Length: 360
Length: 179
View 1 (cartoon, each protein chain N blue to C red):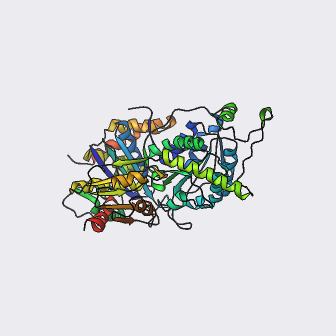
View 2 (tube, rainbow over the protein chains, first blue to last red):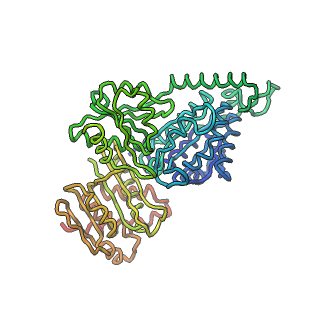
View 3 (cartoon, rainbow over the protein chains, first blue to last red):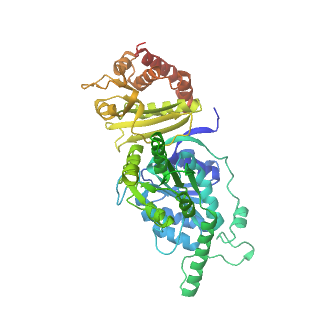
């Protein structure tokens, strides 16, 4: 057996990957089903090894603003929460995006709206991808479908955030957070030195060494023309991200008669539905968006070219389906299947939906 | 090789940890593994179940509706999961408190007296390892050696002295299955 392989919950793998990345700080407030992130960090006590700060804040509002401050100093900082907590963080998301600071925010979704349930959901898709806060902004949204991806997307999220000076999100759900699978964690990287941060983030506020011009991190700009200029700069960055960073997985899309588009844990269940369909001689392919924003529009359009119909299974009442319909410009019938409020479908339910909605 | 398993019972019976031990045993044999617990906010007293999949290949869904092996430890779980055993699959149940035994004839049904066996061993905490032993006798998806190796990997060293007791419980469980 490979000694580097361990079994871990998604939430734990994420916490471990953050320490191994050389993170500078975590600020968070416990909420099911992601509390294992904070618990694992407390258990590992990285402040004694790498010097990473782990702080339980007094609320989600405090957490996101601590992240905002840490990120303004060029530090690799992050927070994690679940749906109701993510709602509280929307102001901070908008401010961080407007201030062009790199940060990592994790939402392990649970059933809503409101305080809802503690079980898995995907109903924060709009909130994450279309800007839950005010103004024209986008975080990069990564959707892990396995425990390994929970670990891998920590490094990817931060690397992209620092590259584009934007906010990266990991949008998981209670199922991915709570389930155990095999995982290989990355090697421990040292935290960046102050000199390295100064070099990587010349915009960061960390003391004016050698009397360089002052860096100012703010989202406020009362001059409309300047604020419009800022917006154009944000949009230019987003276009660049759309050009370079779309990621998706294609499974059996070559020569399939029907297509499914699903992300995260729903994509895993859909894969099983695909296996069941194959046993009945129905050829189904799957596009699994890995980045929900930027969305794999071209890839879906391409995969849908010769199919008779598309099914979009989601644990949301019709959110992902809007982007799928836009991608295929409504030229292909697109059907929807959902389970809501924390309920997770069995693979057979998805197969039945495919037959009832599209094959008939 | 692929085994899709669900273990269900009361919270506190060791259902979740039995699944965990099984998952680690699969890890010891380099198999692909998923372990998905399902329990309410209450950790003890309510019903709990865990889905474990061991496979030589990439595992698609960690969520299932039909299983190769179903292990149930109370009446509610039996009522819920009897219909979800795949035709030709295995159903193992502890007889304690069962007033409505399973009726299916297209599956292999094994009734064990694990609660009584744990009393015989004078340690009710060995209950889930007895059940695991029975399950592995019926369908040896992992070896006992892998289970013990998995225990050693997951238990802190100060608890290693408990491993022989667990081995005894596993063997007791195996002896509950005839043939």
